[in-house]
Amino acid sequence: MTPVSSSAPHRPAEASAQEGQLTFPSTFLWGSATAAYQIEGAAAEDGRTPSIWDTFSHTPGKTYQGDTGDVATDHYHRFREDVALMAELGLKAYRFSISWPRVQPTGRGPAVERGLDFYRALVDELLAAGIEPVATLYHWDLPQDLEDLGGWTVRETAERFGEYAALAARALGDKVKFWTTLNEPWCSAFLGYGSGVHAPGRTDPADALRAAHHLNLAHGRAVAALRAELPADAKVSVTLNLHQVRALTGSEADLDAARRIDAVGNRVFTGPILEGGYPADLRADTAHLVDWDTLVQPGDEAVIGAPIDVLGINYYSPTLVSAPAEGEELAPGEAAKNDAHGASDHSPWPGSEQVVFHLPPGELTAMNWAIDPSGLYDLITDVSRRHPGLPLMITENGAAFEDTVNAEGEVLDPRRIDYVHRHLAAVHRAIADGADVRGYFLWSLLDNFEWSYGYSRRFGAVYVDYATQLRIPKASARWYARTVRSNSIPQVDSPS
Image (cartoon, rainbow, N blue to C red):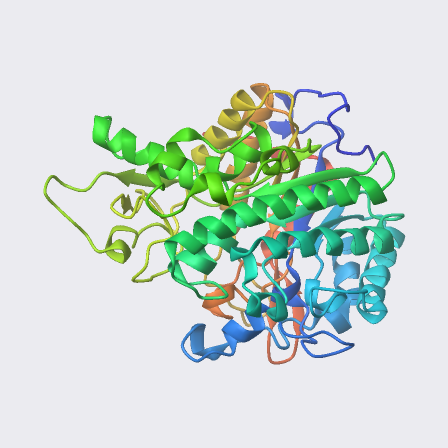
């Protein structure tokens, strides 16, 4: 398999007019993705201690019907069955996350070998099946011990993360070539410490900004640790859930609202990671909340800006915003009620609590998210324009719908097939227009614990009966398998 790297030749996508197919570059990496707390279960086995999500999900009222990830889809015990499913579907790559409290239970000190052994066995099983392992170091499961010491609001957590990254790289770096430091640090910082709808459930806008900086610093520390431990050909990335922000109208006020959300939703990470520092407008918008000159210590932005090989992009739906009506003042939770990130009386947008979010027009998923593939095309092309020469990967894209098993034991999900089909066509269009997109990871391989929504939302290509743990590949899984094997999708009328 050709590795994903900034030096690999970029071949434009080609469309076969005779077959009516949209064909992807021959090196395109097709995969699916999961996260440790959402699928592994075995929450207290082999030395694992609670993460912030264990604590949060066991707190009454925080998740749907009190659902937890204690068992989830029992991947910890069924990973061989799940890898066999991946092989049956012809996946070329599998993006998984490593559970920090399974590997380093207190977030400090030596690794627990029993925890590492699980990931060693998983990686060996993947490689034996011809599937490239893609490891994410952090998908939101901070060890509770570190949260008790301040969590991401304190600088020390970033230092500990660098040490953890080194432990993981030493254990798996001889077999895992693709590494991601953080998954969606925006959610960790602003949903975890701002709106409180994610673990650890705090609601302080200043803490959210502090957490964002320390997550950025953790990324930089991890990049340095990975570079020191991994072979020279290993690829290092970060995955961001960049918001494709659109102004409701072309008015100056609405355009400024979009600028504000772009700053605190996107450039708070892309600025220091890719552009040398935090943007001045973000600092100005939030100066009443934090002293940036004290928070960002000399040398921090240089550490954060260490070069990466690939940028991962997660996309589900665009973001539509406006300024409030003249003279109107809304409660923060009311202004942000349509921001697609869960209901709260507290805004996850520090410094921009009065920006009003609107539900974009069109068909919705079960998450109440608008289906709009043009947002993915626009996001890819915008990132490519802003950061030329940086390879991109679509590390999450998918949709939740109301899936049921019919009398024949099948799960027919034509809406998911249509969603993925149209979004892949948008990716193809972006590649044809010059974007360097190296792969696509469907979210998710399995139905799983969907954070505060518990088990009430199903994103999986594979249906899971949670009572029996029976796996049933949905119609979309079979469709995706054909797509992977042919490296192409049928032509569609409107790829955007």
